[in-house]
Image (cartoon, rainbow, N blue to C red; front, side):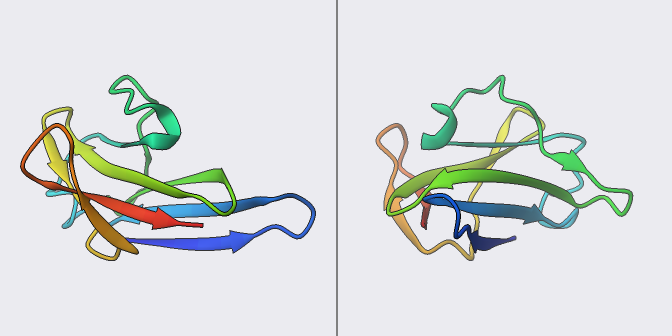
Length: 102
């Protein structure tokens, strides 16, 4: 699990690329990235599955903000990003949510 931040000079936006290896995805067929940036919409577009089984997606996120997020594997299992900037307790479960600061 990882993400890469690229700040744009022309706009107050950070381009964030999220990546999840096939092992981290527990060999899932589909992974969705859900969080504050898409209202935790479980019907959000799945991440792109690469030929090697990894998953990736890129989002443009407004700068100077924090976003809670998690990965949803095969629409049933939640997974955190263990390289997140920090973690906060989820208001819906006893687990933590990953947080990215941009």
